[in-house]
Length: 303
Image 1 (cartoon, rainbow, N blue to C red):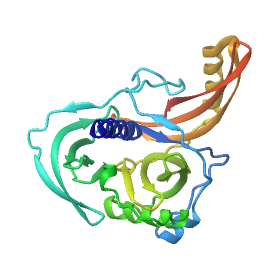
Image 2: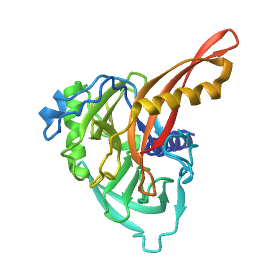
Image 3: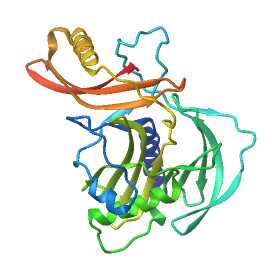
């Protein structure tokens, strides 16, 4: 029974990691200010931003190529597809934080708006790994609870950031321009969530890394997107025009139920066709019976 429950919990965690890979958090920015470049632990600590909950940018179906750049789109979430990989290595070993894992190949996945093929492996203890098929870079890992390092001493946020930055530098490539985005502590799970991201032209991008640690610093999960923005030039973006179109679109969608809307955050991303997009996470207040409710939607504009 315990093993069955453990399997269910592990499956839920794996699903959460998969969804997280397809989601990117965007945090509120009142001004477009280009953050400092992070090159050391000390800088990572001093760049620590406000402790705000993340909002997700949905990675989904490709936009209609005939749609003009001034029309916002909402995207429907799509699950990754499994693709054939005849050249997959069925068994391999991988060292993570001083531990050697014996891995067995499971499948190769492709997410809707990414060209990256992910080779998925599982260890004997139930930990899950994903690697970039082309480069071999570790893209994500979820460590099974039964083998997580455990100590009796809780660490502070600064120590957590140091541990997370070390993990990022060790297993990711080109980490010099990552910026500390946020660190959150979940009192229910007693875990820390630490995110780093890259900025381009003052905008947060979908290049991010998310590291999940227990309160004593043990690695729970790690996700890192391969960088898409090398050589990409970001043109001037007419946000006023976008916001006017957004307001018009939201009012048309909610009609007489509409009360107000506000932009929570903005993120630059690149779709599978290599096209630059900007997404706006919008908080919409609307009437429902005798109450007013708030929902969050994400709209995309081609850039």
